Length: 265
Image 1: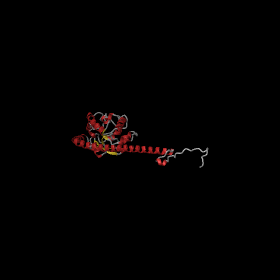
Image 2 (image 1 turned 180 degrees about the vertical axis):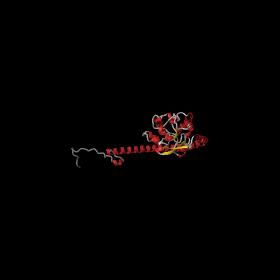
Image 3 (image 1 turned 180 degrees about the horizontal axis):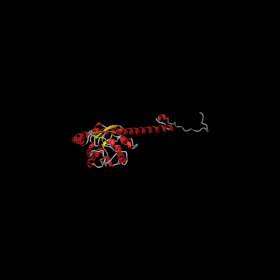
Image 4 (image 1 turned 60 degrees about the vertical axis):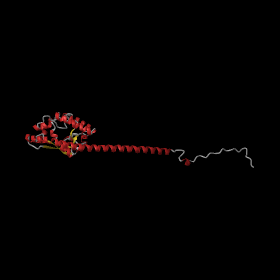
């Protein structure tokens, strides 16, 4: 037998390194792997964020569409009820108008509605038939502080019957037919004349973003006593916060405003 040399050293048994494949995962993570995992997590969170945003947008669109449908339903029912209840008054006003001055019972005028679309606007005639021709001569008597709209407390173009029906807004009652036709709503900014819209600023044109109405906030807050610029501010306030209960409140507050006749001329 061969003897071991004195120089020969005993070697310690080496333990084998665990095979990464046998463990099922990598023992070391490369920088590229970290970036991949971070990107995957970011992509996942971004996906859920997009889903939440889409869901919120869908809910907003659905609520807006439901609000428009419900408002239209309220307009149809409300205008039909008003026409039926006020029909006897329509007859009385028609007879009085015919006896008071010659001319048509209904005055038809072009007004500007939703998104700048023109439509025929109906009201009981409260002026003499040559009122438009006489207006040019009265422009310097305009009492509107802003000059965009024309208002005059003692307008000589108004008939005796017209002065009464204007004071109590009876001349506006044929506009319930405009509501039925879909050109107007019960509540909304008052429809302007084309000449008034021509003088509008970009902010003023925001009044045209919704259907015009028979009554609005400034109609129950002083009517013609409120300057045009303040009317625009109140209309924009209504557009931002419009809703069913706000419309109901405005309609109820319109009744005492009409009875008082304040600011109507």
